[in-house]
Length: 167
Image: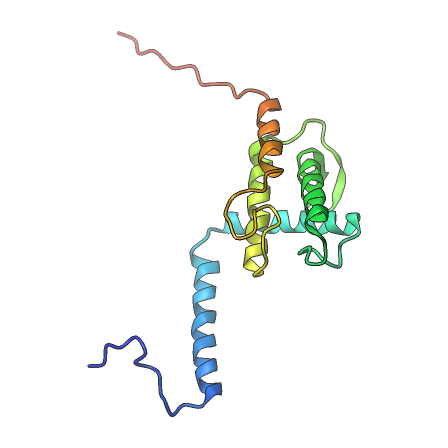
């Protein structure tokens, strides 16, 4: 029995056959990752963040380049700060369009999750996340203090009062 990891490799196979073989199996793996490894709620939240990002890019004049490939780093940083600020205060419709300004801003964890979801969307498109340092999983130095500032101004969470047992 051949236990080689390349047991399906046929040296005499033509290059198009090998490419099709590899691509078909990679496609199946990608489908499993998308459909089975992540819940529907995660996909919806990521999609929502992406639709809002597209609206933001169009309103900012970079709708032609939502991956920010043509912008210098300073331009990317400015857009990222602006988007996170808008995300906290904006009211959005179901398609990701802007409806107006919220009465109360969303909490910092919502903005943090949106940044994370958008970063994942960039990675799914094989692009570098503009929220992270190049080649590192660390958030950009400008994103960390902004999210920390949102944490600081969020209303305090009301802790649950413990129930004391009756003797």
